[in-house]
Length: 84
Image (cartoon, rainbow, N blue to C red; front, top):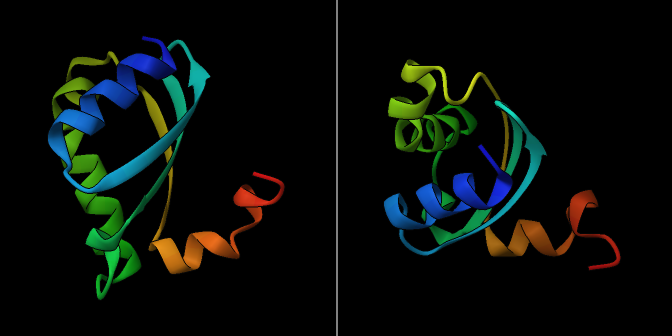
């Protein structure tokens, strides 16, 4: 899979989020930004992303997924957003 494939899957399955994907093969880093994360615990945020990719993880198309989630307000001060 390519980062664009992972982004397309997430875009289709989770509304109202912006995704930044890095990686190659079956190992990816996902940074997700959206109001959908407001009020959710870190575990619930992770579960939302993992749930959207469950089919690909189960099939082995995705093996390792590192996830960071932010609300838009949190993203403004996130280290990954520095210089963006």
